[in-house]
Image (cartoon, rainbow, N blue to C red; front, side):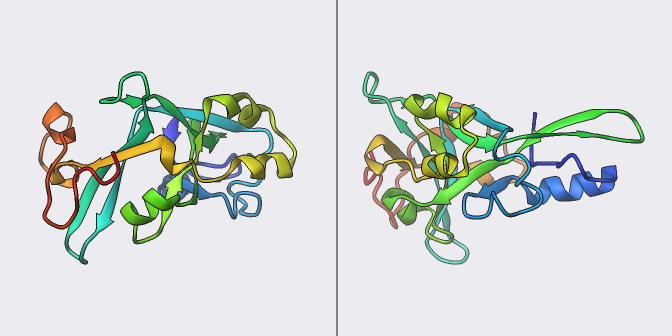
Length: 194
């Protein structure tokens, strides 16, 4: 599947590319209302597996500090625990080529107290579905049941730390371990969210 939802009703490949760029995230507040999402939320929910995600803390307009964020691993405190994001999906058929494109957005919620500090520009976070709620997320069809699962993940179950600014630099190899190593910045404390 590709990140960025292309709804089944999109007419052309050009339109599909444009809408995919605008639908990488779906806010929990409007997922039942927006035409791109409302036909998926009750019966086409999915889980996106991850180990961590990135977000930038705005210090000034030009100074942003990247963070590595994830779920605490009580068995291995130096590592993150794999988890699942909550999403929805759709299948679009290119009428010109017959190609089927499966795609998804990650749903976002208001930020928890940790993410309010890190994602201080928009104060949002991805929907993280706990292990105990994964089956409920996939099977729920009632809007009230679905809405009850779209809440911020508890701060006390998460950790985060600042990482290298190379993560967002163009022309630099990012897929190396050094990129994810904790960094010291004068503006923020390294261990504030560990």
